[in-house]
Structures are given as structure tokens and as C-alpha cells.
Image: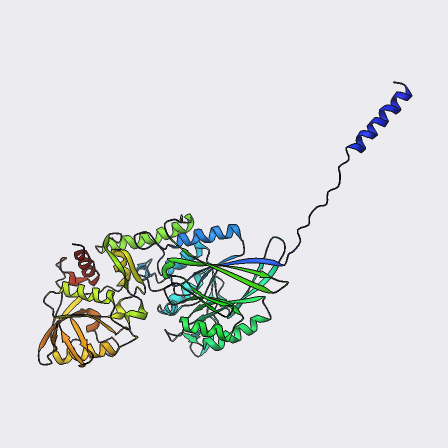
Length: 517
């Protein structure tokens, strides 16, 4: 190749290189837009780890599945339990590995389900101090309480939680960050109703604590939310007094509700995770504007359970089922279908006659056919929920977790009248009586037994739950063996399995079965 040919080839190569040089295209930058989205998954008053109503509603493994789906869409997702989850529970009354379960099953399930934040409910204080401290220690989720502390002797200090026994804070600050770098801080406080006072817990005024907690969080956070277990009226009052608390995720009431107070929201889901609230909070750091969109989501058969949580649920329901079967119960048997909810909530059971209370009293009458009147203390009904749709034996077991026998007593009319009158006046406590064949005529101020005016000189055969004859019920201390107005007490035949008086739960199951015929 000669020199001129070489130059020509070199020139062609340069031309090719320049012609192939890529054109620069401006690249869009994805900087911080100062906007961020946070999600709170809210539930409250959850006593049952497994689905209810024949498997149709509820179930913590389904809630775990919802949490997992939300997390996949937004890592800034927090699952919240607004109190009442350790008690009451029929599983909690059972013994396992040498001690009462007392909410251990729920803590293990909540740990698996990815619950993030909780506050105390009043029912957390139904269990013993040592049991509550153990549940706190077993928790991997964060507790927060602005108005409840641990009393030990003469000192008061925060409860501690987790394996490292860290103090439960009065407030806390969550830090959230999205993909483009927007960062915010969210203040959280927790409030509990002082309705179940015990020696080992101190309640301070929740309204005062709410204001102090909110004021302290204002300088630390972009906005503030609250996890509460209060009456709805108190939630609204707290919101009015502290209008900067934009979202109050509440419990205590068992039916879903959604109230707005100015720009704030007070929300409660249905008990036993029959529904959950999904709150989507969008915050603009530039304008400091917060918008909240809340969706009430049903927890039902359309949701596939999260497998890890489902495994933990199956472990505990298996333990319970075995115990039930040893006692002669089939917890999964459907015994009745109700067309209207059976009212077992404490807010009704302890204040007025309810259809569930009357049903149980009628079951007592059916088990003791020689009786002329039947009664039970409302405190023996611990379901604190409405029973709807398909009723199973398990529903009766969780309604009457303390079991007990049905006794009959020959009782003078004067004593019967006294018992009925005090039981009617025991409003708001467990000694409020639910009855069958006893009616009070308010205009006359008279009691009627099976349609006839109560005769103080007559002796009546009364069927009642055995606890009522211990003298331990409030204001009924005189109602016990040895009272001269109790002439005779009839006990069930322990050797006769067909004698339904041996177990009030069996009596209710048998009675509800009979209603289907």
C-alpha cells in the first residue's frame, strides 16, 4: 500500500469515527420532591387469632397478608394495635407448659404478623402483673403509653418491654424516608381509659397527658398521630383540645366508626379484626400540608392468609382444640345461625338485658326444667363482642371461658326479690343480672316471676350459675350457702354426662341446637 492510499484510509476512518459519535441527550434528574407518603394499618380490640363466623371473617394471618401487601407498595407502612388484645380469650384461660397462656398466643402471633406499634387497652390489666410483664417482655413490637405507668411498691416507673427490657416511652418519633430522599418525623402518643384499675398500674389523666405529649412532640416532629383506647366521646374531646393531632387511631368501641373533628380524624375498626383501617398520609414538606385518606377494609375469605403467621395461629388453635376435645367439645361444630347479632359487649351486657344474656338464661332454665326462674351474672360473659351469622361451639366457649356449673336453690321470695333488685341496680359491673322468667314492672315497682307477681312468702326454685352462690359477686355477698333464706341447694349429677348442669357451656350448646329443630 502506497503513502497516498494510507492517507486516504486514515481520512475515511476519522470520518467514520466522528459520524458515529453519540449525540448528548439531557438526562432528567430525580431529586427530592419534598413529598412523602406513609401508611398506617389500624386494628383494635382483637381477642381472637383465628377467623370467626365459620372462618368467614377476621383472622390475624389475613391481617398479616394485608400488611405484607402494603409494605411491598410502600416500605413506610406501620401496623398499629389500639389496645385490648391480651384478654379476654378462651385460649388465654388454658394452661400450657405449666402456666396460664394469658395472651402469650396473641403476642406470638402479633410478632409474626409484623405489628409495629401498640398501646394498652383496659383489658390488658385483666391478667396478673407477672403475666402482663411476661407478655411485655415477649413482644418484638413497640409499646407506647402517655398515661399508664408501672407501680412497684411506693415507686412508679415506666413498664418495660422486649427482651432488653426497654422502658415503654410516653411518646415516640418515627422517621420515614422515601426513594427520592424526602425525610419526615412522625410523633406518636398513646392513651388508655382508666376503667380497669389495678394495684400495679397508675393511670394519670389522659386529657392532661395528651396535651403535654402533643406539645412536646410539636418541636420534634412534622406532624403527630395518636393511638388511643378511649370512649369515642373522650377521643373527640382530646381531638378538640389538641387540634394538631391529625389522626387518632382508636379502640374500645367494637364497631367501626369514622369521625372528623376539624381537620382531624378519629377512626375505629371492627373488633376481632373483622375489618381494619388503612390510613394513607401524604405530607408536603414545602407547604407543610398533610392529607389523609382512610379506607375501611374487610378482613374476609378473599384474603389469602400469610403463611408464617398462619403457622403460628395453627400451633395455638391446635393446642386449644385438643384441650376442648378432651372436655367433650367440638369447637368447629356449627350449632346455630342467627339472623341478628347476639349482643355480648360489656357496654351492653352490664347495663341492660341483651338477647345473648336472655339466651344463656333460657339455656339455664332448659338445663334445670324444675326451676321457676333463672339468672347469671353478666361478668361471666367475657366475649365482649357481638356474635353474628354461624355460631359454633367455639363461640360459646369464648363467650363463657370460665365455664362453671348450674346450681339450683330453694329460695324464699324475700331473698329472691332482694337478689333481683340488687342485680338490676348493679349497672356497669359484672353483678348486673341477666334473667329468664323474671320481669320488673317499673310503673308498679314489682317483680313478676313467670308472669305472676312475686310472692315474698313463697319458696322459689332458682337456677343460677355457680359463681353467684359463692358470695363473691359485687353487692351480692349474702348470696351463698348458709344464708337462712336458702333452704336447699341442688347440685348436678357429676356422673351423668347428659346432665347439662355440669357445664353451663354444654347447656348453652344443647339449647342452641334445640332451637334449630
